[in-house]
Image 1 (tube, one colour):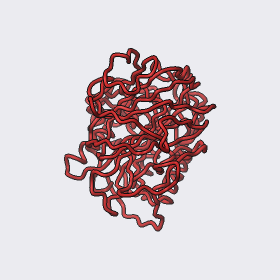
Image 2 (image 1 turned 45 degrees about the vertical axis):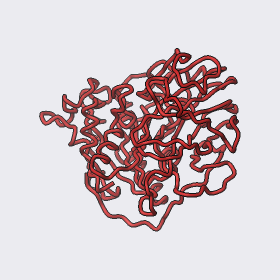
Image 3 (image 1 turned 90 degrees about the vertical axis):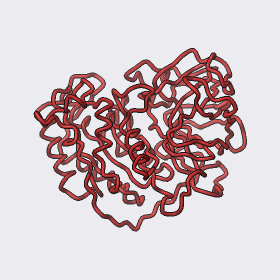
Image 4 (image 1 turned 60 degrees about the vertical axis):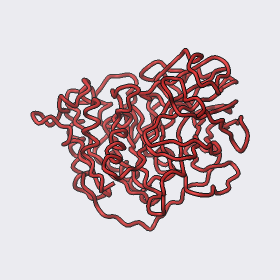
Length: 428
């Protein structure tokens, strides 16, 4: 990865909290009263980008939603703290979302949580809350000590009918459902259904563990992109995405920083998709720049913009043919948005796509032109060359066999580790 020095007069303050009905706005504050929290600043420790309800790649509960259920979701934080809060999203809901109760706890195994760690969550002091259609909110803080790389379980009681659920389609982690109210259960017995998606939960924030002085108040790193960032083909429940590998590498190097994953499978830079989320230029603020404590964003996106038109896959349509100039223009929007927030924006070359359903002469040409722009334009604050890091030495248009998940497009677990190794940590 190559870095470039940039100065910026823009200094982004952590947004004050609360509740918003704006579809494209992230909520990063602490209490609906709007008062500033005392003590250390909040930092995002885990995040997932919200999506509209859809069939998805695997069976999920998003289109049917929930009614009289308790939903239990397990996530792994990359930053520790002695206080925690959750962020919930009803961004794509068409009616208010009623949360009858919520808890946070340290994970034991599967749907079970550690005895004595269950903390009831409140919202402006109340145990239940209603999130308006298209709204998002943060809970009040809960006193729960979490270590970096510890798994945490968030449980929501959805007593009323929710309608189609705002969700994140590909979690590569198991979520659980039970009939009735089991929000305070430590055991897993009632949770007899499971899926591999996250619902309504868009973030877990922490504060109070590390001495986050002014120099480190915004050291969070967001990885922004499509299915490769999302971790497609990585091992379920093992935290093997490249965001996980990068966070682990930073910690091993003695420079721990929270790493947040803002990937959506199938996402595009330039066009919205009913299946694959709002276009990257539209969701960049909500899903990356507005997360608390973020100072760097790494952008890896564009393979779907240039590759969908090479395939007859129905969910890829409409798939207009995109030129390198058009894709570069979209990335320039992301760079400008990041700089306006005082955030370092690092680019990434697109991975080899030879042999995949995204491959064609035109897609290969546009990919090469785009990658040369990333390497040579100097417009990003730095770049990481995934194209060269994962290429097959015998055929540079293909992913090396040891890194290929089998579809010639997505890395396997070893490939995601190779992506993390390709990053110059000092340039983040």
